[in-house]
Length: 277
DNA sequence: AACCAGGTTATAA
DNA sequence: TTATAACCTGGT
Image (cartoon, rainbow, N blue to C red):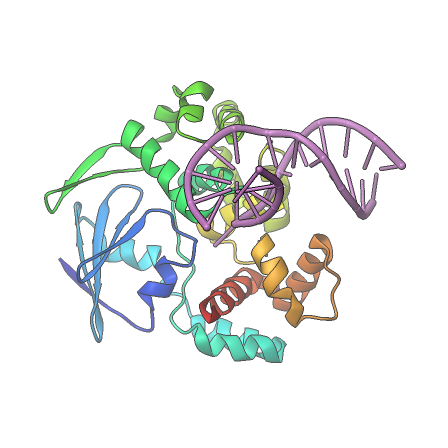
């Protein structure tokens, strides 16, 4: 068990904002499955109480995962200056963080996410993990880690289809082929400047602008992206009358305005607007 | 019984 | 270059 100074994180909004597919509530706290371990986390007044199936480096890993060492105050100050609407919603987004999740897991998970809802995405990922991932017993419950790359290489399109992936199955198979044929593909993505990383990801069939942006934002800590989904498109952009309802215009508008933190900005929009209803 | 869900591709103008 | 249909599946 480790105690970590909580600072200003809000676990509920961070974990249930749709950026993470492997989290669940349990009595007293949350269970989330990371790359290599299962984590129980409880929120107290000043501390996060964390237990894990693997407590090695746990403090550092949690701090990285929840992005606790980043100065969100300065990001928020910057974003607040850009427009009145942003300034207003930031107040409601205190404690919201961009999770730093495993790049490979994000790569696969967000291909699955296209034209799909969170509930079903989570279910599919759960099934795949149960089938091909390492089993972890933690607090007398069984959990399954997200499968490793090399295990995925042996999975066929038919296998994936049987888990309900539909036409996304062939996208995944193809994406895995790209990883297999390009050594250190994901490391290279990490080292590319964002616009080039987007371009590179989007060469892969099944990865468009939205999915590529999500992969970069949640798996690679690239905050200067602006993943626009239909929900944001319909519900949020009405607050910005000056822009056209056209994906490219919106994206350019946002990235010009919110610069290095447009990814944080859109998460705030999404979060605050969704919490209204 | 259509229609949609936190998209993308292929095809046509 | 921009617009529109089709796509797997599960839910309303």
